[in-house]
Each structure stands twice: as structure tokens, then as C-alpha cells.
Amino acid sequence: MQVEALRDLVVKSLDDMKGQDIKVLDVRGKTSITDFFVIASGTSDRHVKSLAETVAFQAKQAGEPAIGLEGLDEGEWALIDLNGVVVHVMQAKVRDFYQLEKLWEVDAPAAERLSRTRG
Image 1 (tube, rainbow, N blue to C red):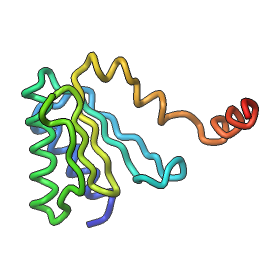
Image 2: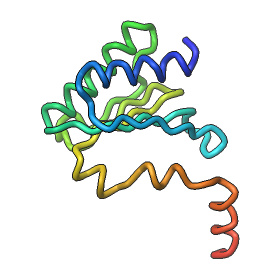
Image 3: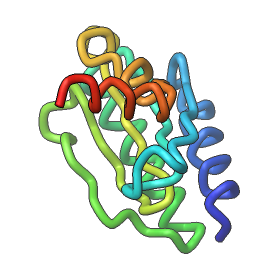
Image 4: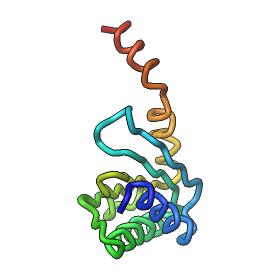
């Protein structure tokens, strides 16, 4: 499966399960970890767990099983590693605290300039 198709499957799964404020970040060229981050909010620990489990199940059904699944016990922040797509499902308060969108939307050349000026 192409990474774009996997990204779309993840977004559809989150949307079908009423995930909130779904964002897709294209991080190609910013990290070698993955191509896309998909970030969504759940309304409770149970909702976060359900969203994460559904994404993992749908990806597995499509022939792309998760290589990592973390945070289901607590339900505040779940991470699903699908290799080309990494999914973060968080409760709103956790998402507001960590602000992953701001971290990864930084322009790569600007980030390089910042690290050179500090070093």
C-alpha cells in the first residue's frame, strides 16, 4: 500500500470514529522516522483507546499491521506506528500541552539556522 493511501485510511478511520481536530503533517524532509504524522483528539480515555484500536485494526485489515502501539493503558496519548504514518491520538488537554503541530510545522531551514546559532 502506498503511504498516501495508508494516510487516507487512517484519516477516514479516525473520522468514522468521531475523532476530533484531525491534522495531517507531512514530515518528509524533516525526519527519517516517518513520512506523515496524523494527530487527532479523543474526548476521553475510552475514546482515545477506541480510536487507536480502530486505526490499528483497519490498517491490519488493509495489510499494514502496526509495528508499534503505545499508550492504550492510560488513554491520554496513544501512538500507532504504521512505519510511513505515525498516528498520535490524545485527549485535548494533553494535545494542548505538547503542541506537536507547532513542533513539526517548523520550517526545516529555519530550524537548522536556529540550531547553528545556538551551537
